[in-house]
Length: 212
Image 1 (cartoon, rainbow, N blue to C red):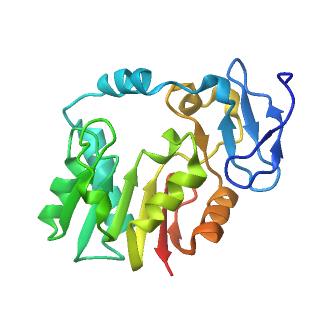
Image 2 (image 1 turned 90 degrees about the horizontal axis):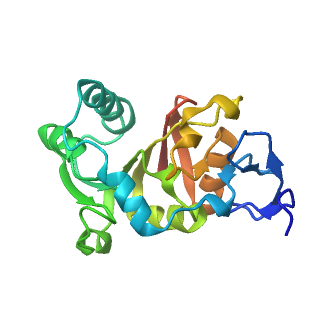
């Protein structure tokens, strides 16, 4: 297969050609406007774990402020009580501390740092994925998994950087563990596939769905 041939979009299976993006080979779906790294750039699990291990175990002031803002805009306006799953919680546990303080019951799961699968056997009033979905190599399957963890009438709250017009200068694509980049249209496709209703988005880095 030549480098500029089309590969199917991981979300909607539409052939997706390369787009100008510098050294990193990116593809954009003409149907759902999902942008994804060519599979040649995918890392193996051990490389991913080493990269994640470089993240600080201490929450900086900026990180804390961003997490507080996420809670205030993407969770509490929709659910002020009940159960929460912090999916991809990492090692810090900051979201759990903030939400516990607000009176919600929080569980955490992370495929590398909190690997007990027990939380994945329950369903929740809120599933939160903060800086997680950009790491999905198979976003269609992963969003189906996330949706299955949400109770009917519950919410799926996501924080990720939405696609910018100039990808050649976008720092987000340079992280070797970032593979999936979403536009408003991409999230519309995800909602359609998974029986979700859009409740709120700032069209920049946060989006909230309700499970029908």
